[in-house]
Length: 118
Image 1 (cartoon, rainbow, N blue to C red):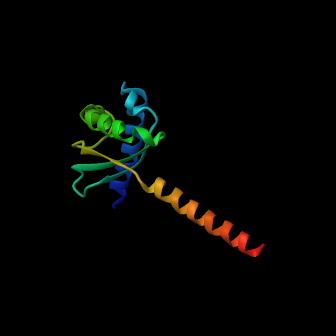
Image 2: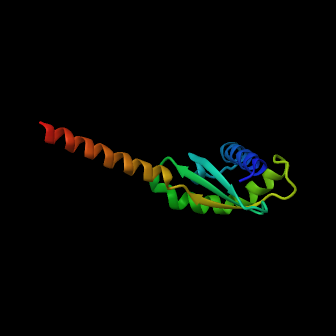
Image 3: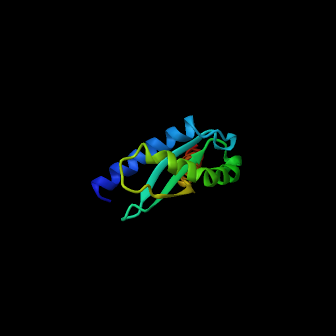
């Protein structure tokens, strides 16, 4: 990814996070964290990765984010200095969940090693 694309993606993370926190009035979007934005080479599409505080609300949050995508894109027009605002596609970021599973497995291995030593 070029420096320009990285700068735009970083700016999108910041602005989308602010819009979700301050301007979107949907209770299903509470406690959403934007973790990353991946832009296509021509800047026409953006995958917006997010996580939620409560895992049980993933489905409702996904639906709410998809319905708010047009509003968010409209709000970005005044905030991000690029010719065309990319089409937003929200994707749940499973990397945090995955890293927690890995940590649990490592802890179990360490506990097993301690138990075998005793």
